[in-house]
Structure formats: C-alpha cells, structure tokens
Image (cartoon, rainbow, N blue to C red):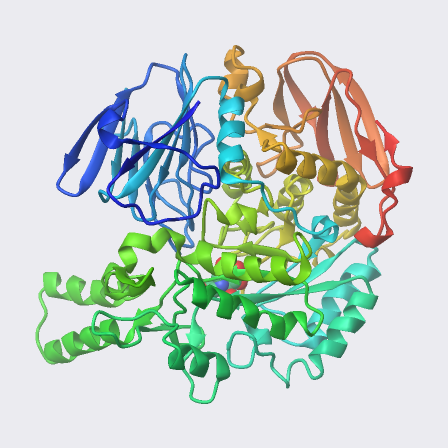
Length: 633
Ligand code: MIG
C-alpha cells in the first residue's frame, strides 16, 4: 500500500507517474515536526534492521550507521566519509520486522541520519516545507521496490548494442586516436561495440559542434565506424559557451532560455569552454529547444550520448572570482596571520561548485522565479529528460543510448546513469557493486561505474578484476582520465586475458539483455542484495560483496589485489561456473562458506540449483552475436 502525504505546494518533479490522492502531512505516520522551514521526522530502528536504498550514494548496501545527503555533487573523491555523490535518489527501505519504504519527492536538500547521531534512530530532515512523501507499507523489500517502481514508471531500455563492451578515455581527441583504439582491440581480437568522444571532439568545447580539424567530415567518419560495427558516443555538457555568433548561445540568450540571477541578467559560470550560460532545463520550452539540438549530431549518424557536468558543475562564477581576486588584492603586501591565510586559501578553493553560486541562480518554474537551491536536484535530470523527450518523439523509445551523470528519480524512464569519477582503487570495485542494487531500487537499471577506475593510475590486475564485475553491469565501459596510465585492454601484457574476460560478456549478453528487459517490464531489480532472497540467513543478511542477479544467478567478484581467489558464501547449493573466453568450467557446491580460486582471466558465476542460463558464442560485435544458437548451462 502506497500512501502520499503532501505539505504545502510542492514543485512537480515528475518522478511519480501514478496518480494518488494526497493526505495532509498532519496525518504523517511518524513522529514529525517543523523546525522553521525544515520538516524533521524520525523513528526507531531495531537492532539488526537493514536500511536499503538511496541509489547512487557512498558506503554500503546496508545504509545504516551513517548520515547521507541528497544533493547532486560534482565531487571526484568517492571516499566513505562523503555524504552524497552526483545523484539524488530519495527512495529508502527500512527492512525491519515490518518493512516499509519511503520516497521523499523533494528537489532540494534532504539529510538522512540513519543511525549516525543515535544508533537506534533514523532522523530525516527535509530542507523545505513544500514536498510529497510516499510511504509504502506491506510486503517484502522486493515487493516494496516493485510497488514503488510501478508508481514511478517503466525504466529505460537502451538499444541492444549498448550491452556491448565500450571503451572511453578523456580523451580520444581526433580520428586517429579513435581509430587506434579500434585497431588496438581488433588486433587482439577483443570484442568492442562503442568508443567514446570526450569533450575534445567539440570545437572549443561548444555543445553540438564538432572540431573540423580533429574530425574532418565527421558524418562520413561516423558512417565508416558504423560499417565496422562501432558506435561513437559523444559527450554533452550542461554549460553553453558564451560566444557571440555561436548559435546555441545566441538563441538561448535571445529567447531568455538561460538561468538568471536575481536581477534578471544571465548567470555566468566558468566550465570547460570558459564562461558559460546554463540552460534553464526546468522550463519545458527550454527542454524542447535543447533536446532538439541533439539533432545536429543524430543527423550525422550519432545514436548515443553521455550527459556530463549537469549537477551543474561550475568551476567558478564571474562574481565569485571577482570577489576572491578583490580579497587577494586587498591583502597584497600585508603580513597575513594564519587565520587570514587559510581564509584566503579557502576562498579560492571554494570557488568551484560553491553554495553562494548555486544560491545566486534562478529558474523559471511555471512563470515563477525560483531559486536554484529549491530545485538543485532535478537540474541534471531535466537536462537528460530534454534529450530523452526529443529522442522518443523523433526515433521512438529505446533507439538511442543515453546516460547522465546527475540524476533524480524520474530520469530513469528516459536514461541510464554512470557513477561518475571514481578512482583506480580496489575499494571502488565494491563501491560499484554496492550501488547496483540501490540504483535498481530507484529505477535506474542501465548503469555502471568507470571500469578500471577514472582517476589515477590503474594496474593490469585491477582493470581485469574491475572488468570481471563489469561483465555483469548493463553499462560495461572502461573509462579513464586525461593524464592517467592508459588502461585499454590491449595496453597491458598478455591482452589475451582481457579477451577472455570481455568475451564472457558477449557470451552472456543474450541472458543479460533478457534479464534487463524483464526487470524493466516487471518493475523489478536486476541486482538484489542477498538479504532480499534469504532474509532469515544471518550470513546472507550481512553480505556486502556478492549480489543476486536475475532469478538464476549470484555474482561474487574478486575485489582485492594479490589474491588468487576469494571467500564466497553460498546461501543454498549452487553450481560454480568459471567462465573464461570460450571455456566454462562447472563445479557443484554446497551451501556454506567456500574459498574459490579465480584467475585474472576468469569470471566467477554461481547458478542456482535447477536453473539454467543461455551462453552463446562470443563475437567481436554485438551485431554478430547469434542469441538463437545459445546453449544452456
Ligand atoms: O571536469 O569531460 O565525469 O567522465 O571524462 C571533468 C571530462 C569533466 C567529468 C566526467 C568524466 C569526463 C570529464 N568530465
């Protein structure tokens, strides 16, 4: 049973598609109070109750024992002390003796104190008085997810080829660089379906332009790659370069489509292109306009995009920079004490993604001027919806691959997400794993992390182990940052090991695709915590390193360096399958704890008793797969 409580006049986030009659917040079934403009509610948690949800966020599958914040943040250090990442996914499940779910539909800040201040208490603070809260009672956590998902609408299904292996790096800055990647993979017979274009493909980082110098006759190049079975996936950033004569900027300015400051002038912030204006995606007219801009690229044969920097990320604003420079000038020549030194330093460090800047931005929401802080968490989601609405109208559902960095529930209907700028750290293999079921709970099925890690230098074994988890994530993309060690599969010694892992992905694609579509159609999860399936099993309940996949499987990746395998817990008898290239080695195993050896070129998979999954022959491209000829193992 899902019940809606409304306070004030909430901004319509379009997260929920099912219609509800709302009850007044006075009837809200938990202890609650207003503290000024904040709404605070709390309840007790029993010892051992598990808390699930919050989608893309730091820490564990069990969210208990930490304080989280819903506030889309461009923060590349995903350490366990963080409270938010790029998304705001406000759905949570309290899995006590009577499990219930909560969705706080509110596009500004929310604080989730889940046993941080007091271990036995959850206290949730909604930073405003205009919101909807939905309470879902009854059933198991999985049933609660299904009821929630039915209310928020069916999840995005990407094209089939989006399940192929994808290679990205900031940046393959010209044709030759792109060709070298394809040749690198082809020469080693490692499958590949997509190559990404990061910001350097553009003319001076201007959205919807292509550098003539780097990609002369881009349309012909896109066609040529497609003939080779490769899709090129360009990035689109939220900020629009301020440049006279640049049509996107000129049109946006002439029509008043950009976010404003309180005085009505256009808000300007520095991002990659230099000074930028930010389209006001909260305005449906702007969404329609910006969405249609993607046509520039689809006309050239492009059929996939990734939307970046849409929290929005702002390196500095003209106003912020001026203030900082003035402060520095006023202190020049003075003998600074430590306090003033740190203050000056912090002033410059605080220029990026500053609260002051976010507070200076205004949107047009239904003709009303609304401060950005009130709608911060739906800005990026609306950028992605702009594109999604256009693609659906123009090409039909699911024809275009798209995923976004920032997101809010609702965007799951038109797009996937990726988990942003992680690191080449072993701990980030597990972080990826832990976010998968949580993202699924919130409707995001097409997702995955930068495999091999984005920031810092990767090692060969890390990339292989990361990929062995990525074999199962709907988005299987290796991506890394400019200046870091090259981490394409063919760059390391014995590229055959990479072929072995990536071929396993292609062999599993028919199964993974079918599982994906089923989850989307049935409002279900692809990945579940073990505790969803084995609620009375104390070891399964605490498991944070394995996941259930579909109805048939369990996955348990290796996530540590210098190990030959890992300990795995089988909550029931299963078949352990080691997959490597065309090889599949099976062994029956009994319920319980086991140490299993897994080599760097092997993918471990556990299949439940009585279940079978299809395995097809590997191919170099998804288009060459023969799902009908799959054999069942
Ligand atoms: O400020 O476009 O998360 O994937 O490679 C960095 C360059 C901007 C952040 C994205 C990352 C991308 C990078 N972008």
